[in-house]
Each structure stands twice: as C-alpha cells, then as structure tokens.
Length: 402
Image 1 (cartoon, rainbow, N blue to C red):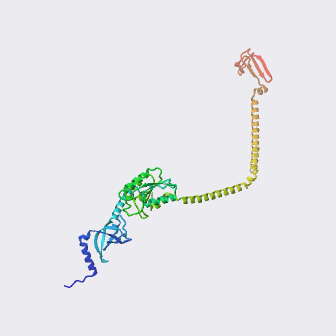
Image 2: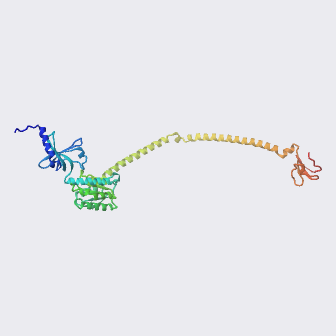
Image 3: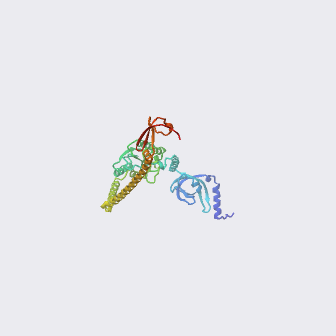
C-alpha cells in the first residue's frame, strides 16, 4: 500500500490533534527556569522553560499575566501549569500557561507579597505617618550584629562625620530562626532608651532567605510601634524588605544609613563659613545703605536750615492769632451792642422811668402793699404815694369806683 503524501499543514494539524486529545498534556505542571523572556506590548508573555537537558516554549496570555502575584524575570525558577499544544503556524509545540508561581525561593516571594498587601491595607506603609529624621541627633541607636562588617562601617562613618553623636549599640541576631525575635527585642529596648534620637536597624546584604527575618510580620510591627524614628538599612541597594516599607526612612545600605542620620561636620563648618560671609556682606550692605540715607537726609535743606520749617509755621501762627483776635473783637462788640439794647429795654420798664413820666405808686400805710384797687383801702386809712422825687403821706377821705 503506497504511503500517503501529506502537506506540512496536515502533519502539523495531525500532531496538534494528538496533543490536544492527550489527557496528561491537558493539565500539566512544569518546573523550569525562565529564559528568552519577552513581555509583548499586547500584554502577552513569551518565554521558554529550561532545565539542564531541554527547553519548552511557553505563552502566557494577557488575561492570565495580569493576575500573576509576581513579575516574571529572566533566570527565575517557576512552576507553570497549563496545557501543551501545537502552534501550527510555526510548527512548534508549546505550553499555554494557565497559572504560574515562583518555585523554591519564589514561594517565599509569594508569602512576602501576601504579607505586604496585608500590612499595607492596615496602613503600616502610609507615608503620612513617617517621621522626619532629627537634624542634629544627640545619640544614635544601632540594632545589628555586633560582629558584622555593617556595624563597623556605620560606627566609622558616624564617628568621622559627626563625632558629637553618641552611638548606642544593641547586639542583635540578624539571620536564622532566632533573628526575628532578636530584632524585635532590640527595637523595643532601643525604643525605651530616652537619650536616643534615631535608630538604625539592618544588616549587610544576602539572599532572600538570609534577609527573611526583616520580612517577618513581628519585625514590621515592632518598627511601626517604635516611638523613635527608625532607619531601615537591610542588604544592598537592590534588596527590599518589609522593614524598608514600614521604617520612617529606607537606606539602600548600612553605610548610607549612617550618612543619613548624622550631618557632616566638615560640611557644617563650611556652610557656617559661607553663611558668615553672607551675613557680613549683608550687614555691610545694610550699613552702606543706612549711611547713604543718612547722608541724603543730612543734605536736605530742612536739616541744614531747620528754621525754614519753623518760619512758615510761625507765619501761620501769627495769621491764626490775628484772625482769632479779630473774631474775639467782633464777638465783644456784638455782646456790647446786645447788652446796651437790653439795658435800654430794661430801663424803659423800670419803676423810676415810669414815675418820671408822671405816674405815682400808692402803698397802704399799714403794710406797704401796693394799692391796685379801690377795694384795697378804706376811709381814714393812711397811704404813702411815691412820686419821682419823694413820698407823699396822706389819709383816705373818700373812695369811689369809676
């Protein structure tokens, strides 16, 4: 029987059909190292999983990639699950990734990410609660291994930069099972030390496992509860731990932390010199300005001949005095006229003036009362009649009414 002749597409489709029907390959988990990693702008991830003997092409489509709890990177060990099929256009079998997570140390990364989300939700990473470092600390606390190079570097840098600062060491286990508890106890002891102004907690670099104590929840909460500002100095520049997120300030290295917590004495002295020069220059400039203003003021005519200010005032005073005198004279004249007029009116109404016109005033002799009516006197009653030049005494002989 002759052998059938198939096209490339037919062979590829047949192989794809075989793989798609295989129950084992429809749900497989593969362990390997990521290589040839490409993140396409579409959001799909293309890479290979390899071990010592072989490699497997993989595709992780965007909807799955967006749900990953970590960022895949070249060289990362992962566990990838999905189904094996054939990409017909390239004639290449590949793993369609349905889920993926780090393998080995990667599992620690997953735990770390979960704890990070938990603490972040509780507000332990909130920037608003982070405290500024003191500008001129009196004492610096260091929580780290007493035998590590990190401690020696920090002590050397602090002593060189700012010898005025006192260094208080809190010997701490920074690696291994006992590390987390030791770090917590050191932070608590440092927090109770009233003389401290700032605390550095950290260690030199290492693997994720070496630094894991600084990712423990108890350590993060101890930093959060510390009443004194805390600088986290764990590992090298690329190392990040939960302690870095909770601390008030994160330093890339222990040496950088030492430089952060104290000022440089030499820079301070240089700044003081510069400020002194600026201050002296500013004072001299102010003195020159004041001298110029004083010279300009002294050159004014009013200063050289102060009488030119007084003369117009004296003239105005004379004018005001003359005007006031005239006004007073007018008022006095007016008062005189009004007084004379009132006196004339009063004189016209006085009894003496009436008597001079021929009138007389009759009074009863017994009580001196003015007789205003014929009924006020009786016959034979004595009366006194006052005229302009004297009094006439008489007796009433007759009384008659008109």
